[in-house]
Length: 212
Ligand SMILES: Nc1ncnc2c1ncn2[C@@H]1O[C@H](COP(=O)(O)OP(=O)(O)O)[C@@H](O)[C@H]1O
Image 1: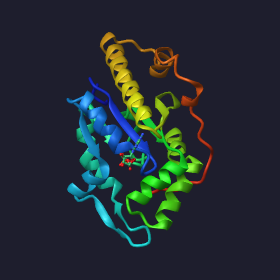
Image 2: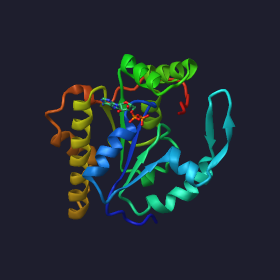
Image 3: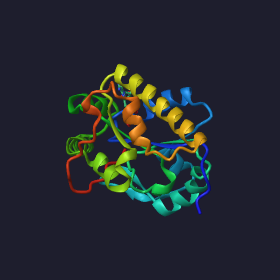
């Protein structure tokens, strides 16, 4: 049986350029006892690569190897996981999935500034338009723990971090009290001032993984 976690594991996902790393950085400042796992870096550091995809100009992650390395760490809880791929982590180890979304014009500028070549920019823009990452998340996790948040502006990013910290506090309170209510039910109540844009709205699209 899975050991009980005393602090939640947070998965911050989204198309490359949507703001995962920046959001995680801010989040970690607010949650200093949480460990931050940027999976691209983690895979590199732990030699979890299985070749290089020349056409995509990106390394291919050996997901089995990655999970072997990561699982014992996630079992301890208090993790912030940053990756555009979200459907590889065992459901039992993830407590909240935040899918960051971004306007395509803004995303284009961010990816261009990052020096991505055009085909890679296009692939990522298509993935964002089609909601691929959100679809993967809703396919892989209970809908109650998947939350879609807009990250076009600094103000939105700061508000997102505030919300995630509030959810963490709520999770801690619930688990301390042994309350078994559904997490999202409490979140909805807590965030009743949020507008309806925050509801899940992923379109059904074909599977396509983006890479950095
Ligand atoms: N909500 C936001 N508002 C303004 N700039 C942002 C926002 N999110 C990300 N950025 C900027 O966009 C770029 C890509 O963000 P990053 O966090 O690296 O994305 P990801 O980790 O999803 O690839 C960075 O220069 C970052 O400062």
